[in-house]
Image 1 (cartoon, rainbow, N blue to C red):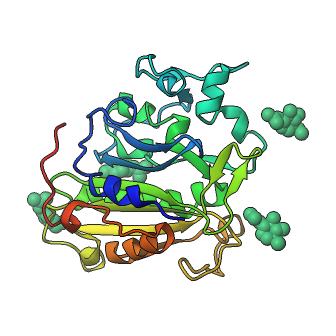
Image 2 (image 1 turned 45 degrees about the horizontal axis):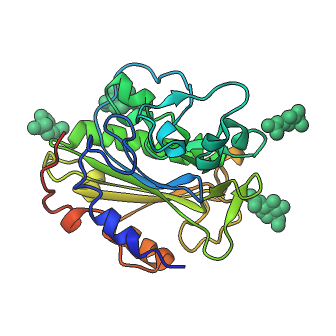
Length: 275
Ligand SMILES: *[C@@H]1O[C@H](CO)[C@@H](O)[C@H](O)[C@H]1NC(C)=O
Ligand SMILES: *[C@@H]1O[C@H](CO)[C@@H](O)[C@H](O)[C@H]1NC(C)=O
Ligand SMILES: *[C@@H]1O[C@H](CO)[C@@H](O)[C@H](O)[C@H]1NC(C)=O
Ligand SMILES: *[C@@H]1O[C@H](CO)[C@@H](O)[C@H](O)[C@H]1NC(C)=O
């Protein structure tokens, strides 16, 4: 498998800015790189802002313009009953996740946004991948919270975050008979070019870049992310391994068969983005 375009999109992930129109105009300030055949995103790139207020209620929405090119870009609430067939064809719907043993894992978490409107617009299934609850409610959630606290405390300028998936190497895994592709791993990286230089010792390697890969399959081998044998039962096998950006890019290169640069010039100086 080769994904030569991935290099291109990732390289520009931080150049795209936060509110520009892109692969569909996916609501305010969010960027998804969506695969129609997988009915799931490859990755999501966004600019972090310190969250405020409570997590919005989880009312999941869909993207009408994926189903109807002429539709406007505003997300709509998924109806309770029957869903339009064009919508079902173009994206995942609630029924795909029901009884699937997977939860809806946000790539771009509502936790990383300040404005309520931005936060609730992360609740779309085009921003979600099938994620085991042991990851979503365990080590992956801890990672999102750690990133939140670290950036809120020590990032002075903008922080760019890219979160994506790593597909299975040989045989794709799906939910509901090839409806939605299941990722083997999730990964996330941030780039904060301007940060507070008086970092505590334990955070010295967390700036200007930071990266991690999380397991989404208890049966994956331990070469990329080892299993903590002492983990609580419900989180066992869903570890997240923190690593350097270079190490993450090495794993992405291996799996995607293409050189991957997640941030422009390795985050040395990000080009200005329009907001
Ligand atoms: C989920 O499983 C329950 C119990 O087996 C069943 O009643 C329900 O119809 C299933 N829902 C879907 C969407 O498959
Ligand atoms: C995110 O970080 C902010 C700033 O430190 C903090 O107030 C908030 O409680 C954090 N949210 C979570 C869910 O950890
Ligand atoms: C940098 O961090 C130190 C120690 O936590 C703090 O006293 C200082 O106010 C911070 N400076 C800025 C510009 O945030
Ligand atoms: C892991 O492997 C076991 C034994 O082969 C199997 O029963 C189980 O369904 C697998 N779990 C997943 C999530 O694939």
